[in-house]
Length: 315
Image 1 (spheres, rainbow, N blue to C red):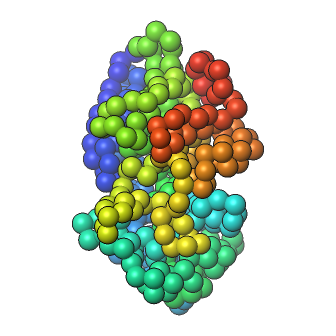
Image 2 (image 1 turned 180 degrees about the vertical axis):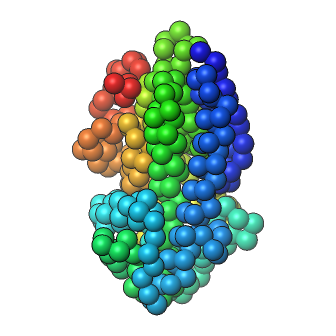
């Protein structure tokens, strides 16, 4: 079977697509267009995007959106309302105040943080199922889908490729990997995906995971950060305090069937300690995790203990 692959930049990251299919070149082009459309519609970095129309009408009026965006916001709102975890799609005002990952990142004053904390309550996202409308009830609220959108995008690309007859493929959106079937080129019949060592140079792997039809998503405090006042501030923010999450976790990798679940739990699992995180994630059906501590120690959920086998969601 012919193999086609490409790499391009989009959404602030490198995207890799590998397709084993006789019509692979066309399918990759279709996937590129699909991702480009999603990136245009779901971004907070363009004033005229579909998501930003919702944000611009905060405190003013509901905005009708397409069903896929409505359903994604609905899923994210449900997870955000669970106070047991730090996942929160209403965190946009805090993200824009810190600006972590941009050249003008700064530590906000306590007064600035206090002013934003009243704007990050996901219960103030009002959804109308009948009209597919979204209303942010408080002025200056903002939805930020950065912690879930790429997972949705990857799942949708996979769905289109599978529907087109692809049985072997690989989708990587930065730290988000989703596989189709197994790799025909590897002796272990799996896609062997490495987890970046959080304290080593880019490309240094702390553990490799063999996947078949599975997703693997990694979040970490080493991905986006800045230094100020002799301290290091990472991009994973706590909506309760307005500050970066205080935790002994350096990176958290989630393995699941669907990439959207990996996106959700790689943020939702960033609890104050690895012990709390693993206890919490062990309760989630279909979710396995690999956590690396601030000291470089590797910890795993129960399903991965003494398991060197391929993680298979292809069936």
